[in-house]
Image 1 (cartoon, one colour):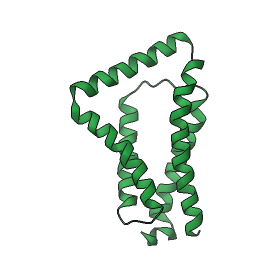
Image 2 (spheres, rainbow, N blue to C red):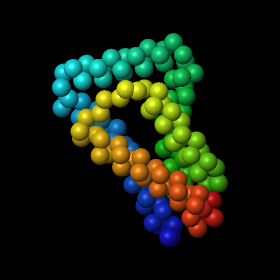
Image 3 (cartoon, helix red, strand yellow):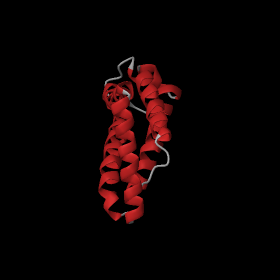
Image 4 (cartoon, helix red, strand yellow):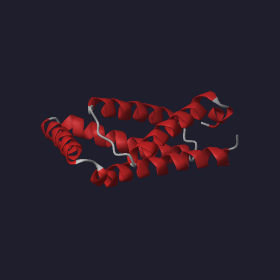
Length: 135
């Protein structure tokens, strides 16, 4: 594997993650009313929790910004980028599981699953492939 292929995979990972966020918000309109209301209650619960605990708000924003910043840094093989990406991926997983139960629309699920798969591919390439020597 060469650097161009790795950079392409990293770019696709960032694009699919952004698309999954847009598809998630766009797909809400296709949900039945009871699930749409459940989703709104879930969002409000998260907002209320972040308003009472400012560190949680900072953590959530930091994980998202760190995730995309580390993907960008991996494009240039910066030494801290793979550790930061691993930490932000774990942080994002903690955030996702702490929000359970989560309601996803049919439109967003393929993007969400593809994002998870690509995150795993990038982590594997960063730590367990010959390209890891570039960091």
